[in-house]
Amino acid sequence: MAQHFLRRSDYRDMSIASISAMSDAEIHSLFCRLRWNSTSHQACPQCGLWEVHYERKSRQQWRCKGCGRDFSVTSATLFASRKKSLRTLLLAVFLYVCSVKGIAGLGMCRLGGYSSKAAHVTTGKLRESILRTQDLTPLRGTVEIDGGYFGGKPRKPNRRGRRNDNVIANRIAGRKKGAKPWHASGMTRLNWNKRKNRRVVMVLRQQGRLGQGAVRSIVAIAQSENERDAAKLISKYVAKGAIIMTDESPAYVGVSLTHEHYAVSHSKEYVTAEGVHENQAESYFSRLRRWEYGVSHGVRPTYLADYAGEMVWREDMRRHTISQQVEAILGKALTIGHSRWWRGYYQGRRRGAEILMNHGLSADARSRMTKS
Image 1 (tube, rainbow, N blue to C red):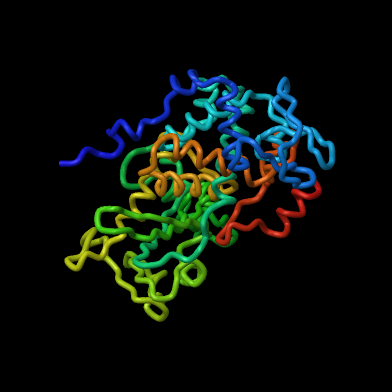
Image 2: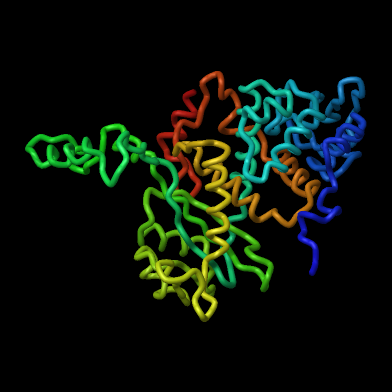
């Protein structure tokens, strides 16, 4: 029997020891290659001139031959105006990649020598690089679709048993005229307010060859798992002619009108006799749940799309080596320009709004960011 990929030595092609053994010049050369795909030429972030610019070795910078501006390998990137060394940034990305269920900001503090604020912003920027560069071309072949609810988890009652006496009393009181909405639902006020943070993570995963699992995934956040939102996602992210597999949720009753559709009833089985399943979608939710329960211990709507996108990337890159994953993250961070959501975060310039369905901010959120 073949050895599992994660147990093979060629998977572990980067470690803390190997990063410590790299010279400053080697690390700088790695960043240059990932940003410009060259170690000799540079593109000026101000005027765009592609040239062998004047090098300022003592400062690891260049002076543009066209506009005369000084720039470094991290100028006009997510790491612009950095105070950390390139070695520290590389180590942070390594720790981020090797934490397969995600890494908490305080975990980055303990392992990477970051302050709590710097760790929070750095991990946020890495998630932003993933979300903004996600491949949204339509999925083909066999596509699994499912939705999972995250956030808004109610607090358990004080008394054990089938019901809390207070909840039953609230339900009776809710029948009276002028009762509060949480009374009518039989909830406490606290749980009623917590339920407002409940969101659905909709994941679409394209199956690979037999034994390969999913090869590409797309994720979006919705208010609920309903037929209208499901149809909108399918029309945008699933190619015509693709085969769609879902569970028995009524949100997918209209899928057969546009695509070949098969469903599995999870109340009876995980896989039908014909091989219909959505195990790859469930695999994604398993990883996201492990992050929610074991790392974050809670989730809020504002940045749920960022975390959901991170776990999609981890699922799709699971068969790549450590160095390939590190270079993939660094390549994204060095080529998408300034951070839109984390630059000046602790100076009050925050996104302040969740990203729903199409990974786009609302007009109100964009205006607030512009004013800030």
